[in-house]
Amino acid sequence: MPRIPYPDPDSLPPGDRAFLKSLPQLNISRMLAGSPSMFQPMTRLFSAYLNDGLLSETLREIIILRTGHLCDSEYEVSNHNRVARLIGMSEERINALQVGGNQTLFSAQEQMVLAFVDDVVTAGGASQASFDAVAAFMSPAEMLEMTVVIGVYTMVSQICATFDIEPEAIPIANTGLEDIKNTVGKFS
Image 1: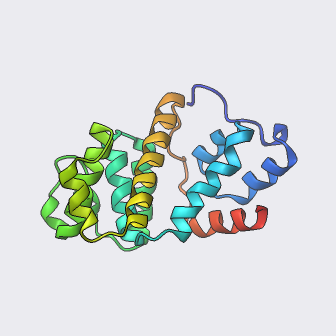
Image 2: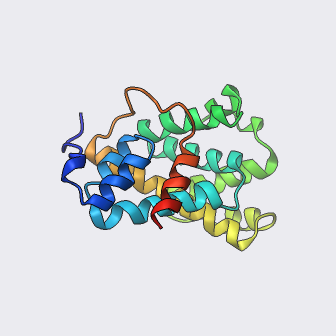
């Protein structure tokens, strides 16, 4: 049970009410709708990297899941385990993203990305070694996107922990990514 109630959709400004109704019914979206100044801009940010980003969907989910595990976010791990399965990641690789998981299941480049994520989440920034390792194969734009994704999921994990946002009782059937893209496109 969240620490504060999810806002009543009928109490939202009309634009936010329609925007929320068009999104996948995720508890994080329901909670964020209670902040009119943040709700739509944050959802647009989510859509930017989820739908139009430079990172492959597999690498993006590796980054998100590792961040969720490091932040001990049941909400993010639950939702993104589902997304990872839907995009074809094996259970073995999904489970290996837990802290202490079997890193040998990942390519050398994926292992370098995981080291970068670990540094950013646990130390507040990438070490020179992990920065240089990913800079050898990622463009500056990809590195910036990756760092934004890490930051966003650290923040969302903190929001979920602060407000006790729990995973949905009934998970959405698909990834929800196309629904977010369509909503953002329709309301832009």
